[in-house]
Amino acid sequence: PLIRAVHAYPVNREAGDVGAIRRSLHILKAGGVVGIFPEGRRNIDGEAQARNGAVLLAATAHCPVVPVALVGTSVAAKRLRASRVEVRIGKPMTFQGSARKPTKTELTAWTEMLAQRIADLMEKNEDPKSADPRILLRR
Image 1 (cartoon, one colour):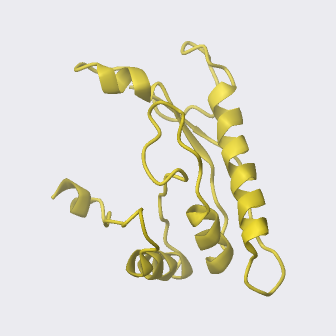
Image 2 (cartoon, rainbow, N blue to C red):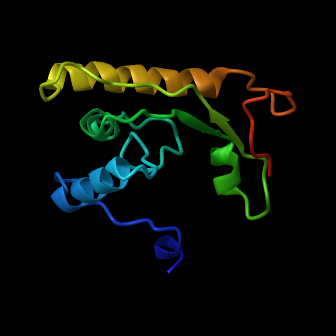
């Protein structure tokens, strides 16, 4: 019920979920926002590799991707009480090749760029007491 309340929908991560892709494209082309973990799931330990799905959707819908880093979630996931979690938001990125469908090589390169941008956001001002203006949420 909580997931439905925030308008989330399930995605089959092991196969190309055509229904989820169509739904996401419909939302994006209508001017909406879709939140996606580029790794295909929450990346609590930082070891998961980014997949091409987020970049493919952005390139197909001709919309920007806003990289977001969640800092401190590994500590918050281990505690039962509140922990400080920082949300760092980067500058929007666009992935528009030519008018044709993007190639797998382009998608892979763009995905690596997005993953690097998120990694850069994770590394900046790791001191939790920093006054970084990109930090929008502290809990």
